[in-house]
Amino acid sequence: MKITKKVWVIMDKGHKAIACGTTRNRHLQLLDGDFKMRLITYNTKGKAEAGFRVSQFYLGDAAEYMEKTYGEEVTIKRYKSGTWNSPDRELEDYTYTHVNQDKRHDEIYEAVEATLTLDI
Image (tube, rainbow, N blue to C red; front, side):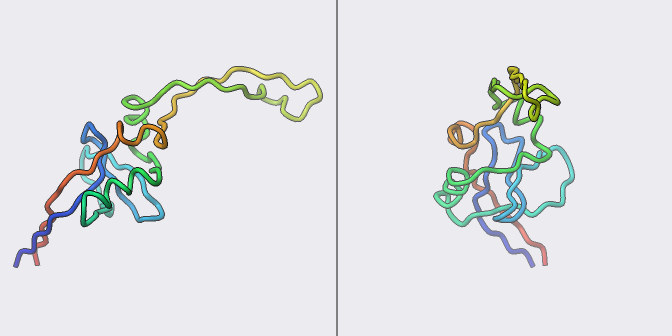
């Protein structure tokens, strides 16, 4: 017996990462092979879109891909190593790559219709 159901999932615009986990522990998983994660599914497109507009994802295994594809370089001031508690603290510029999921969610994610099939 086969049961099929249309659902909505959250993927990045490049369709290389998909939302997995639980509603409280959401992360992205690359679609590069065999994975045994729970997919996060939604009944409507609107609920799926709200799912990526309201809260962020842990980047997990997809961190390198997401930073390379959607990351922005950010420079901040930080204390030099070992000087944060000394009286003559020194600041230095620190640059890193950040995926800004709050401000750029519509550029990064989209709701994609999928069909789940259960063989019983």
